[in-house]
Image 1 (cartoon, helix red, strand yellow):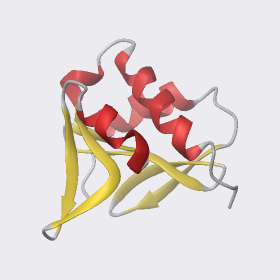
Image 2 (cartoon, one colour; image 1 turned 135 degrees about the vertical axis):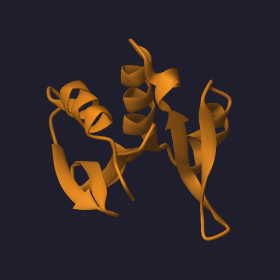
Image 3 (cartoon, one colour; image 1 turned 90 degrees about the vertical axis):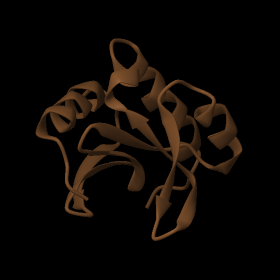
Length: 108
């Protein structure tokens, strides 16, 4: 997955104070892990968040959110969010939503 360096830098800055965060090269770009579980990532012009299936409907109702579809298959519990929808406090809000799901998973 190609990525946007500017968005990657924004994500790094937003995550820098959260305990348990690590960065991993994946899909040709970068993903961030919380206690070893995938939390979020970046692509060109958009962010990816792992919100889980229970929070997916809530996530998709937010501005700029779309389901992730790879090879014609919808990836449940994962959403794309347009860069424009993650200005100001919105990026932190998305990280908090994804952390609710991923933070409840057992560490890897």
